[in-house]
Image (cartoon, rainbow, N blue to C red):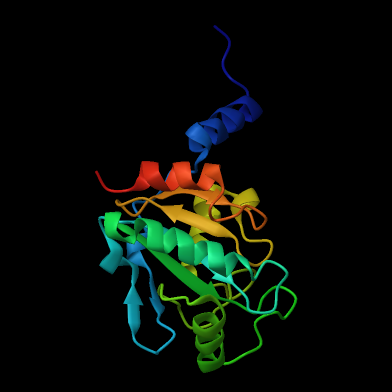
Length: 186
């Protein structure tokens, strides 16, 4: 049997790391991160342990802003079954979330009757991105990083990333509903 060449070893190593489409984790989960709620109080992700969580970066002046209505519908539909929805306002894409936390909160409540948890405005992409978003990008790869507002990450009850959904995917699309239902605690 001929020994493997360095390039073949490298390819085999990369394939092992990317096994099943996910980079092997160091044991970190979403529960290791924390946000600050829009009212300034701590919002540790570990407080959602045992629940399915959808984390969505949001913006009030985006063409996808009407997704707030579908997000509220999703939250209302599943919150009594162990589901949490976390809205993460961000001004990263197109400057479409320029308001203060008070303005964002008022807009969401008045315009869409949002009552799911919202965080303070954070960076979700590029240098200085919130550590949760840096971690999620490393875990799921470059294709799963937010490229615009209303990008969605689904987290299982164990804190591991279960799936992701791009901006144009409606929060109530059959694919999302199926994934959420599969992630709900048993």
